[in-house]
Length: 220
Ligand SMILES: C[S@@+](CC[C@H](N)C(=O)[O-])C[C@H]1O[C@@H](n2cnc3c(N)ncnc32)[C@H](O)[C@@H]1O
Image 1 (cartoon, rainbow, N blue to C red):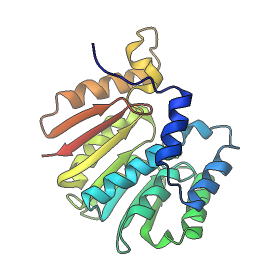
Image 2 (cartoon, protein in one colour):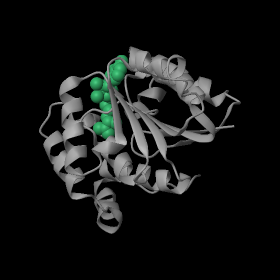
Image 3 (cartoon, rainbow, N blue to C red):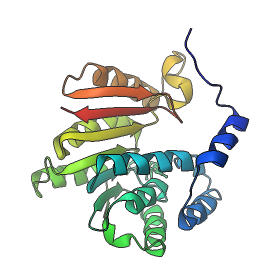
Image 4 (cartoon, rainbow, N blue to C red):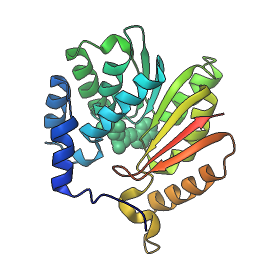
């Protein structure tokens, strides 16, 4: 028997009530994103705040985000970084990128954002082979197309310094990872990803069943 609080809606409201501190521009961005059909792709405000606390605890200066959408995690990150910090942000969608950058500007943190529009695998290859960025990042957040998660993770491990942290979102995929009737490409990719990372001795590992499941891997 394991102790596990039932995080129902009332409990989520309580957690927000006693802990959430949301920047005004983050709130505006969340409200605008809520009007979009794919709004559920956005991380929750509690998750954004959690990322910010992690970055501050790590003393992160240079971070990478794979999968930006309208920018909630990006803006949470940019706000948490020191004034000379930088987040390299990768996404393929021009309209969402514009929305993300607009809100970073409005919050006064656009100078910390280096946005690379295009396929994330190509941007990661460029960072590694043309820019010599291996070992230069403190933190990587992976939250893009699930089929490419393992490729993103491999690139992240090369880009991180030893002791750097990679956080991977949606690893429990609303519970589908333990439902064998679910055999779509995203679910099977996430199952394979979770198994491979479990065996990966290059990292220290934790999988936290918070939000949609978060994997934490620290590069040894
Ligand atoms: C779940 S959303 C990211 C949510 C975001 N982290 C947030 O806090 O709102 C996934 C994003 O990955 C992007 N994406 C999907 N495939 C991609 C690819 N091959 N290269 C770059 N970005 C991709 C999508 O355009 C989308 O914006």
